[in-house]
Length: 176
Image (cartoon, rainbow, N blue to C red; front, side, top):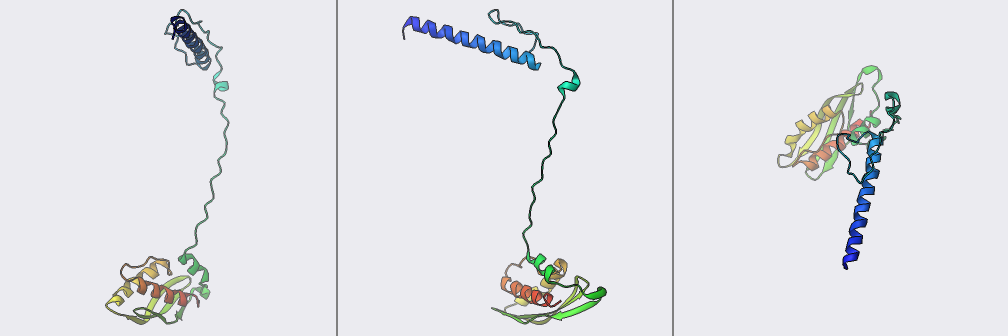
């Protein structure tokens, strides 16, 4: 670039900087952010402070209400089992027998006793399972009572047995 052009660009740059500073100083004084202890450069105009607002006018805040999103819960087997279960009259106990559920490793049939809406007893009528898989039936009974239905997770290593037990349980609960 020519020397003359360099001087012109430098002068314009300083002009832009000084105008920017003056605008910033005016905005800062209007918002109460100007530090009056600092001296302004001699080329920049000194901004005067705007009249102060009262505390009540300065703290006006508009409150808006925020709507909470609605979340629909996914239906689970437990909820479905509860919907199909009818209440026993007057809190008396009732016992229903499931269909026999055959599966890859045996078969399962249950007798389920309910008092009101709670499962109170589950008895294994048929509990056939090969290779020691039947050892999970006491745990399955405990889980079914705690969940008050078939809405509990599978037992690892006994998925088919757990699924057959749940099917038999749902069969009995469907009869209430």
